[in-house]
Image 1 (spheres, one colour):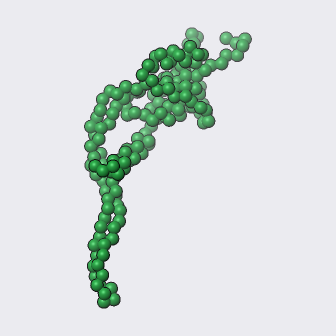
Image 2 (cartoon, helix red, strand yellow):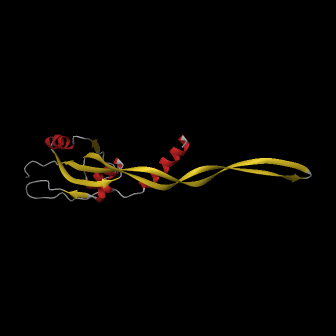
Image 3 (cartoon, one colour):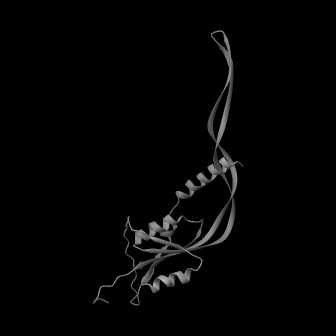
Length: 174
């Protein structure tokens, strides 16, 4: 397979994946934030908020590092599936007002799949004939789209994300 064909395949695969649902949001579960069994369920979309994404293999230690600095885990998403783009975790963090997202992912399996992929094809037309008594021969080149049955591997990951927020308590309040 040529480099061009591989590029077209991965671009098509990207657009197919980009249209899927946000699993970080779909599997989001709010967590208790204090001993009074208070659950942080506030759902508000903050479009301009900066969110820090931490991708780690040392998940528990990273969470502890931030909770020691005054952050609280307000929610969590755990799911299995294709690798989810991290901008979807940012969208979910903004939706719930989180400042930091700590993510870990582990490869669970690979599925061998078959699918039709659009591929550009060159078309060549040969023509000949007479125009005003003159013999004319030539070719014309054009492009079209053909669909090729392609086998590919789809990796399945277990992905876990914790959404953290710094809770500022006003003086005089508990």
